[in-house]
Every structure is written in structure tokens, then in C-alpha cells.
Image (cartoon, rainbow, N blue to C red; front, side):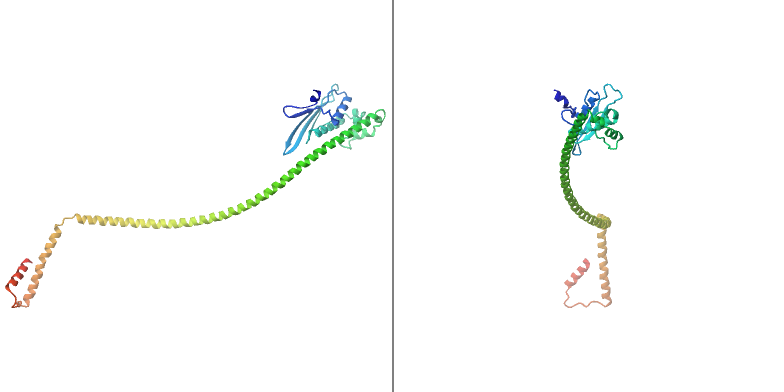
Length: 309
């Protein structure tokens, strides 16, 4: 049960641990804190996530306030890495740096005071390293053991970082290959797009030509419409004239036929005058000479014919 409490996952996917179940900077930090009266190891809260396909993690570590010294406030460290194991180590290292910076006089009498500073020109760290003769007396063995353990922890931390770098390198190589394939696809797509654009340009030219033809056809249709309107007007006028002619013919057919008969009788009365004229002409030239062969019957028939006329 104790092992489970040292490392477990909550429902939100966060890893909780005191990071004391392996040799490293978290254990060195806790042993140093114990020398100054701390009673509880600092807890570590880590969560893993992906950022644009790259595995990442975030670790929060808190050194609680000192149980008796009220001026020794808590220390909170937030570190972002790529794996929880090496990020726990980085958080413990940063906490050691902060603790030494906040309490330079207290750590000067212990081997932890020789822990490398983030800035080698830090005057406090330079002073502690220069005047460390007191650590070579009765504390020489402890100082040596602490230095060896620090080197061991540093080596482990570097090994973890190296594994992380290998992992990131593989991921980067995979992304590089993927980018290469995508670039090839992009080039193919660009070639396809260029071909499509050429086809579209040709079709636009065809459409423009068709539009010009449509405009010309519209002009011809307009002219034909004008001619058709003109012809329709003429047809309408002809229909009116034809209607008037038909009405006139119908009117003539509807008139009575008696005047026509009278006219014919008038013409028959004029014919004897012409005969009389002929007789008068004949009388002017004398009486006609009758042929000896002319019979009385023929004369009578001739007279009868004249009477008929």
C-alpha cells in the first residue's frame, strides 16, 4: 500500500508521487530538507499531453512551508518537459537551486551548499565554494558521498534526457518523412491545379466565343423581329383591304337583279336604230336590186325576221 501511495494516477490523468523510489535529485532534495527540520517530502504533480503531435508533460512540485520557521515560505516549481521521469528530476534540481538561493547562510555549513549554481558567477555560490574548508574536516566523508551521489543523479538525469532526445529525434524524423510525402503530394496537386486552370482558361475562351455568337444571334433575331413586325403590319393591311373587297362584293350580290334586265332591254331597243340606219344608208343608194331568183317566200321570211327584230 505504501508503494502505491508513492506513485498513483488520479481520475484527471495526473500522476502524483514523492519521487523517492529511485536514486536521483528528488531523493537528494528530500534528504537535504530533512537536515533543516522538514517533516514531509515535497509532492510532485505531473500530467502528460500532446502538443502538435509532440509528447509533452508538465510537473508541479511544492516544498511545503517549514514546520517551525515561519520565515521559510513554501517553494513552488513548475517545469515543462517531454517525459515525467526526467521532468521530476528537473523540478527537484530547480528546487535545490531556489532553496540554496533563499537560505545561503544555512546551506553553507552542509554539502548541499556546494551544489552547482545556475550562474557560475553567483557571488554567494562562489563564496561557499571558496570557503569550504570546514567541509573537509569531520564532514569530509559526508561531503564526498554527497558529491558522488550528486554526480550519479546528474548522470541518471543526462541518461534520461538522452533517451528523451532519441525519442524526439525519432518523432522529428517521422515528421520529416511525413512532410516530404506531403510536399510531394502538394507538388502533384499543384501540377493538377495547373492543368485544371489551363482547362478552365480554354473553357472560358470557349464560353466567351459562345457569348459573342449569342450576341450576334440576338442581333439577327432582333433584325428578324423587325422584319416580321413589318410584314405582319402589311399582312394586316392586306387583310383589311381584302375584308373591304369582300364586303363590297357581298354588297353587290345583295342588290336586286331588275336593273340588269332593264339595261338589257334598253340595249335591244337600240339595235333597230342601227338597222334603220342601215336601211337609210341603203335608201340613199337607191332601192336594192332584187334578184330574179329571189322568191316571195324568202321576202316574207326576211320581213318576218325584221319584225322579230
